[in-house]
Length: 115
Length: 112
Image (cartoon, rainbow over all chains, first blue to last red; front, top):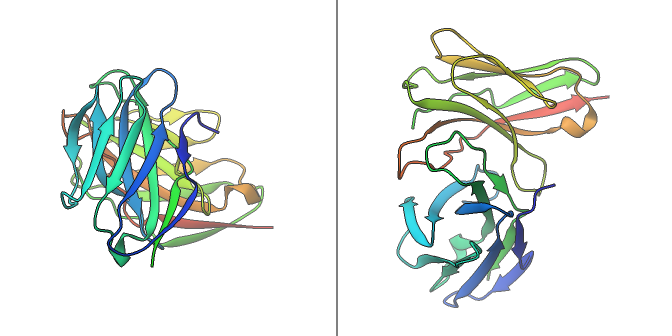
Protein backbone atom coordinates (compact mmCIF):
# COMPACT_ATOMS: atom_id res chain seq x y z
CA UNK A 1 0.00 0.00 0.00
CA UNK A 2 1.35 3.41 -1.02
CA UNK A 3 1.01 6.78 0.68
CA UNK A 4 -0.78 8.34 -2.31
CA UNK A 5 -4.38 9.17 -1.48
CA UNK A 6 -7.11 10.32 -3.83
CA UNK A 7 -10.52 11.80 -3.19
CA UNK A 8 -13.30 11.19 -3.74
CA UNK A 9 -13.25 7.47 -4.50
CA UNK A 10 -16.41 7.62 -6.60
CA UNK A 11 -18.24 10.49 -8.27
CA UNK A 12 -21.24 10.90 -10.54
CA UNK A 13 -21.58 14.05 -12.63
CA UNK A 14 -23.89 15.28 -15.37
CA UNK A 15 -22.67 16.04 -18.87
CA UNK A 16 -21.53 19.68 -19.14
CA UNK A 17 -20.64 20.00 -15.46
CA UNK A 18 -17.19 20.59 -14.03
CA UNK A 19 -15.30 18.31 -11.64
CA UNK A 20 -12.26 18.58 -9.37
CA UNK A 21 -10.34 15.52 -8.26
CA UNK A 22 -7.71 15.63 -5.54
CA UNK A 23 -4.49 13.82 -4.83
CA UNK A 24 -2.11 13.85 -1.87
CA UNK A 25 1.31 12.63 -2.87
CA UNK A 26 3.53 10.37 -0.83
CA UNK A 27 5.74 12.16 1.68
CA UNK A 28 8.92 13.49 0.06
CA UNK A 29 7.59 13.17 -3.49
CA UNK A 30 7.56 16.39 -5.52
CA UNK A 31 6.33 15.07 -8.86
CA UNK A 32 2.69 14.21 -9.49
CA UNK A 33 1.21 12.71 -12.65
CA UNK A 34 -2.42 12.13 -13.63
CA UNK A 35 -3.72 9.29 -15.77
CA UNK A 36 -7.12 8.40 -17.23
CA UNK A 37 -8.09 4.74 -17.50
CA UNK A 38 -11.15 3.85 -19.53
CA UNK A 39 -12.78 0.50 -18.91
CA UNK A 40 -10.71 -2.37 -20.30
CA UNK A 41 -7.78 -0.18 -21.33
CA UNK A 42 -4.42 0.77 -19.87
CA UNK A 43 -3.95 4.13 -18.15
CA UNK A 44 -3.35 7.10 -20.45
CA UNK A 45 -1.08 9.97 -19.38
CA UNK A 46 -2.85 13.32 -18.93
CA UNK A 47 -0.12 15.56 -17.48
CA UNK A 48 2.61 15.82 -14.90
CA UNK A 49 3.47 18.51 -12.35
CA UNK A 50 6.92 19.13 -10.94
CA UNK A 51 7.52 21.86 -8.36
CA UNK A 52 4.10 23.40 -9.05
CA UNK A 53 4.59 23.67 -12.82
CA UNK A 54 3.25 21.51 -15.64
CA UNK A 55 6.10 19.32 -16.88
CA UNK A 56 4.69 17.33 -19.76
CA UNK A 57 1.23 16.73 -21.15
CA UNK A 58 -0.44 13.91 -23.02
CA UNK A 59 -3.01 14.11 -25.80
CA UNK A 60 -5.83 15.64 -23.79
CA UNK A 61 -7.79 18.83 -24.56
CA UNK A 62 -7.35 22.08 -22.59
CA UNK A 63 -10.53 21.44 -20.62
CA UNK A 64 -8.35 19.05 -18.62
CA UNK A 65 -6.27 21.24 -16.33
CA UNK A 66 -4.36 20.85 -13.12
CA UNK A 67 -2.65 22.43 -10.18
CA UNK A 68 0.09 21.46 -7.81
CA UNK A 69 0.36 23.11 -4.41
CA UNK A 70 3.44 23.96 -2.29
CA UNK A 71 2.88 20.80 -0.24
CA UNK A 72 3.02 18.86 -3.56
CA UNK A 73 -0.63 17.81 -3.43
CA UNK A 74 -2.47 18.19 -6.72
CA UNK A 75 -5.85 18.73 -8.35
CA UNK A 76 -7.21 17.62 -11.68
CA UNK A 77 -10.01 19.78 -13.09
CA UNK A 78 -12.19 18.78 -16.00
CA UNK A 79 -14.59 21.31 -17.52
CA UNK A 80 -17.58 20.69 -19.78
CA UNK A 81 -17.75 16.99 -18.94
CA UNK A 82 -18.53 14.57 -21.73
CA UNK A 83 -19.85 11.03 -21.49
CA UNK A 84 -16.46 9.71 -22.70
CA UNK A 85 -14.80 11.27 -19.66
CA UNK A 86 -16.24 8.43 -17.60
CA UNK A 87 -13.15 6.58 -16.39
CA UNK A 88 -10.87 5.77 -13.47
CA UNK A 89 -8.60 8.74 -12.81
CA UNK A 90 -5.27 7.82 -11.29
CA UNK A 91 -2.72 9.97 -9.56
CA UNK A 92 0.93 8.91 -9.26
CA UNK A 93 3.73 10.52 -7.28
CA UNK A 94 7.47 10.13 -7.70
CA UNK A 95 10.43 10.86 -5.45
CA UNK A 96 12.75 13.83 -5.95
CA UNK A 97 15.18 13.90 -8.85
CA UNK A 98 14.31 14.57 -12.47
CA UNK A 99 16.90 12.27 -13.96
CA UNK A 100 16.78 9.36 -11.57
CA UNK A 101 15.23 6.06 -12.61
CA UNK A 102 12.62 6.31 -9.92
CA UNK A 103 9.37 4.47 -9.67
CA UNK A 104 5.97 6.11 -9.54
CA UNK A 105 3.50 5.16 -6.82
CA UNK A 106 -0.16 5.20 -7.69
CA UNK A 107 -3.22 5.97 -5.64
CA UNK A 108 -6.36 3.85 -5.78
CA UNK A 109 -8.03 6.22 -8.19
CA UNK A 110 -11.29 8.14 -8.48
CA UNK A 111 -14.05 6.45 -10.47
CA UNK A 112 -15.87 9.21 -12.39
CA UNK A 113 -19.18 8.47 -14.07
CA UNK A 114 -20.67 11.09 -16.39
CA UNK A 115 -24.37 10.69 -17.11
CA UNK B 1 9.09 6.14 -25.82
CA UNK B 2 9.58 2.77 -27.43
CA UNK B 3 6.54 0.62 -28.04
CA UNK B 4 6.15 -2.70 -26.20
CA UNK B 5 4.41 -5.90 -27.26
CA UNK B 6 2.99 -8.37 -24.73
CA UNK B 7 0.75 -11.43 -25.06
CA UNK B 8 -2.82 -10.50 -24.10
CA UNK B 9 -3.23 -13.30 -21.59
CA UNK B 10 -1.41 -16.11 -19.82
CA UNK B 11 -2.24 -18.79 -17.30
CA UNK B 12 0.00 -20.13 -14.56
CA UNK B 13 -0.46 -22.83 -11.93
CA UNK B 14 -0.27 -21.72 -8.32
CA UNK B 15 3.20 -22.33 -6.87
CA UNK B 16 4.88 -22.41 -10.25
CA UNK B 17 7.00 -19.68 -11.81
CA UNK B 18 5.20 -17.20 -14.03
CA UNK B 19 7.31 -15.93 -16.92
CA UNK B 20 5.85 -12.89 -18.63
CA UNK B 21 7.56 -11.85 -21.89
CA UNK B 22 7.81 -8.39 -23.41
CA UNK B 23 9.24 -7.24 -26.72
CA UNK B 24 10.65 -3.73 -27.03
CA UNK B 25 12.73 -3.92 -30.20
CA UNK B 26 12.92 -0.13 -30.71
CA UNK B 27 14.25 0.64 -27.24
CA UNK B 28 16.98 3.28 -27.16
CA UNK B 29 20.04 3.54 -24.96
CA UNK B 30 18.59 5.85 -22.32
CA UNK B 31 15.30 4.01 -21.88
CA UNK B 32 14.55 1.82 -18.91
CA UNK B 33 12.21 -1.18 -18.77
CA UNK B 34 9.58 -0.91 -16.05
CA UNK B 35 7.00 -3.44 -14.93
CA UNK B 36 3.77 -2.60 -13.16
CA UNK B 37 0.74 -4.69 -12.35
CA UNK B 38 -2.86 -3.76 -11.73
CA UNK B 39 -5.13 -5.89 -9.66
CA UNK B 40 -8.79 -5.41 -10.46
CA UNK B 41 -10.14 -1.97 -9.51
CA UNK B 42 -6.88 -0.88 -7.87
CA UNK B 43 -4.16 1.55 -8.93
CA UNK B 44 -1.11 0.13 -10.75
CA UNK B 45 1.58 -1.26 -8.47
CA UNK B 46 5.28 -0.88 -9.23
CA UNK B 47 7.12 -4.20 -9.49
CA UNK B 48 10.64 -3.68 -10.81
CA UNK B 49 12.72 -1.79 -13.36
CA UNK B 50 16.09 -2.12 -15.07
CA UNK B 51 18.34 -0.69 -17.75
CA UNK B 52 20.49 -3.53 -19.05
CA UNK B 53 21.42 -5.76 -16.13
CA UNK B 54 19.16 -8.38 -14.64
CA UNK B 55 17.40 -7.20 -11.52
CA UNK B 56 15.78 -8.97 -8.58
CA UNK B 57 13.74 -7.75 -5.65
CA UNK B 58 11.35 -9.26 -3.15
CA UNK B 59 8.54 -9.40 -5.69
CA UNK B 60 10.13 -10.54 -8.93
CA UNK B 61 13.12 -10.88 -11.22
CA UNK B 62 13.65 -8.99 -14.46
CA UNK B 63 15.73 -10.57 -17.19
CA UNK B 64 16.75 -8.24 -20.04
CA UNK B 65 18.37 -9.71 -23.15
CA UNK B 66 21.84 -8.56 -24.10
CA UNK B 67 20.54 -6.57 -27.09
CA UNK B 68 17.83 -5.10 -24.81
CA UNK B 69 15.13 -5.83 -27.38
CA UNK B 70 13.11 -8.03 -25.04
CA UNK B 71 12.69 -8.83 -21.38
CA UNK B 72 10.98 -11.32 -19.10
CA UNK B 73 9.36 -10.71 -15.75
CA UNK B 74 9.58 -13.74 -13.50
CA UNK B 75 7.32 -14.30 -10.50
CA UNK B 76 9.14 -17.25 -8.88
CA UNK B 77 6.24 -18.81 -7.00
CA UNK B 78 2.93 -17.45 -8.26
CA UNK B 79 -0.01 -17.22 -5.86
CA UNK B 80 -3.68 -16.52 -6.49
CA UNK B 81 -3.04 -12.93 -5.37
CA UNK B 82 -0.72 -12.46 -8.34
CA UNK B 83 -3.71 -12.60 -10.70
CA UNK B 84 -3.59 -9.19 -12.37
CA UNK B 85 -2.84 -7.28 -15.57
CA UNK B 86 0.93 -6.88 -15.98
CA UNK B 87 2.27 -3.93 -17.91
CA UNK B 88 5.72 -3.73 -19.48
CA UNK B 89 6.71 -0.09 -20.05
CA UNK B 90 9.73 1.51 -21.66
CA UNK B 91 10.46 4.87 -20.14
CA UNK B 92 12.82 7.66 -21.08
CA UNK B 93 14.29 9.90 -18.44
CA UNK B 94 14.51 12.91 -20.76
CA UNK B 95 13.02 15.99 -19.22
CA UNK B 96 9.41 16.36 -20.30
CA UNK B 97 9.11 12.72 -21.30
CA UNK B 98 8.76 11.09 -17.93
CA UNK B 99 5.26 9.77 -18.41
CA UNK B 100 4.55 6.07 -18.21
CA UNK B 101 3.10 4.84 -21.50
CA UNK B 102 0.86 1.88 -20.72
CA UNK B 103 -0.12 -0.60 -23.41
CA UNK B 104 -2.78 -3.28 -23.06
CA UNK B 105 -0.64 -5.49 -20.82
CA UNK B 106 -0.83 -9.22 -20.14
CA UNK B 107 -3.69 -10.57 -18.09
CA UNK B 108 -2.17 -13.25 -15.86
CA UNK B 109 -4.57 -15.76 -14.36
CA UNK B 110 -3.07 -17.91 -11.61
CA UNK B 111 -4.97 -21.19 -11.37
CA UNK B 112 -5.36 -23.13 -8.10
